Image 1 (tube, rainbow, N blue to C red):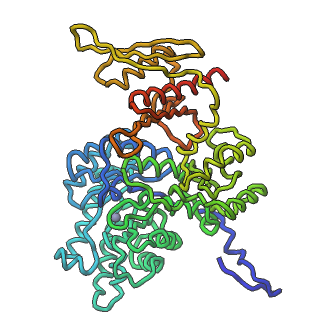
Image 2 (image 1 turned 30 degrees about the vertical axis):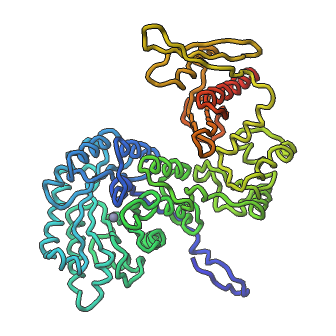
Length: 557
Ligand SMILES: [Zn+2]
């Protein structure tokens, strides 16, 4: 796009450039499960299967799931995914060794869209010396490897070819003492294309010593290597200096049609290109949106990120664009107010996009003692509380202002529940006891409750789950909810104070839909909290309080 001064002396955008007849698709190549699994990331159990299964529903074009020839476990895992996940290309990485290529094919061959990804050693000048590599031999090996993979696949799927550190090699090849690299790059990639490679990947393996801009490098690559118009060009970058997204976007403008990366930059060193950031730019920024699109369903952005976080155990950074807990949230005051005024005219003033665009379920305002009544009321309403602003001002604001903390959804729910269920509890806890049977080690828990004004007792045997469990079961025995009983999802006993004589506090959360707790969703949960000198009493009281609130809601509806 060009900015021009027209004949009337007015600055305008050059219209010719903005009218794009056909948008280009940018394919998303997700290597979270392969290149992302380096540098401290290990996916355990069936994590890779779970992630691949979900990714297949999002519109990514290729999922690189592993390196099947590296060990038996990896082989089995890749095969299991290839056998069961359909939709995107399922890709396995391999060296140029025939045995490894064959093994990779064995793992992938049951999938309707397999991709064998053949890679070489680094082809930059220092690496050639370090590995004592012979360029002519490498060129021959690469051509033979691609040809072998193509033959095995018999027309099915794709073969992708990468020579590591190509961007550095391209940069070095412009120096008079390294001109031989021009022949090396042209030979190794040209050979792979001639043998039928479908995708040609240009890796920016390490951001070291690059003297040309990435767009320039891609343009040069296309002039240097024969046949690039007949294949899909791909770009793979690492985020060493934090500009992998910018580099990737620049590469796209020069004809790259496949982007490789991982979720929130998982990977060795500073990680790979963060895919969600590339996708957000292509999907939300008019300058890219006008020209390109991806098949990725943007509204699944946050769901994928959270799944990867859960399975990898690596937390999403607090400020990570689009997906961090703070990404679409701003503080109180001016920005909140601007946002509210914007909403009234259908515009987001202080947010880059709508939370729905990215499937973001977090809260958009940070609740602290500085937050105003409107902000607190709005968030409580999102959490399912129907408090009037007047009520919040009078009763809840004093609680919010009493502590200098950031109130998460968990804290807000607890405060909200205390006000949602005021007055007399439907069920009251009176006491508990343990009975021992004569001549036996069997013990029984007994509880006494007052339900709707009536004194009732319940009993339960104590199994190997211990006394608290037995007391909870005895309480269930009294209430008799059977299958309607909400699921106990949180039980947190804790000690108040620092001495052994301190009081015990217990927190209990029951979930109506039986799912694990997600505090930021407005799904029904009932919270109970109680303090007592005795841990069992505190636990029983908090359980009874949560049940009591549940029963009160059941009677209302
Ligand atoms: Zn890499």
